[in-house]
Image (cartoon, rainbow, N blue to C red; front, side, top):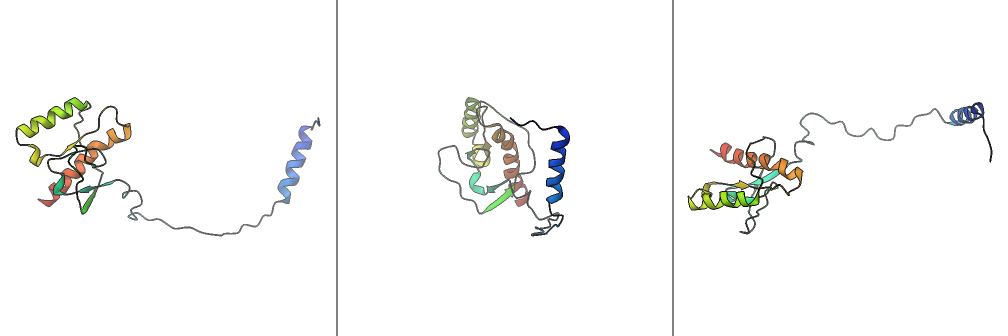
Length: 140
């Protein structure tokens, strides 16, 4: 085993550093980003359409009511928060049943993520609901 003193280690490091070239070559400058390029705002968007009325969907706007896919030709950014989370599947089912009995599901969209869903989807669900509501609000 070789033993090196601290000053020997310093000399070795100094010699190695002195051997490095001090030239800098610029190979690629990359792309300059500006406000409005949309790189962050286009990440979270969902499809929207009249077809969502009367449906039960998840936070990603995918139908979870067993009634097939929902066609949509437009999309909206998910950016506005909304209150109102029901965390138990049985509670969601009761609400949907009551809405159907009262005839309210024809103009209602239920966005459901339960307590056993990943936290990210639970967080996203109210935003999805708000984005769908904004679609109808802006259409008049």
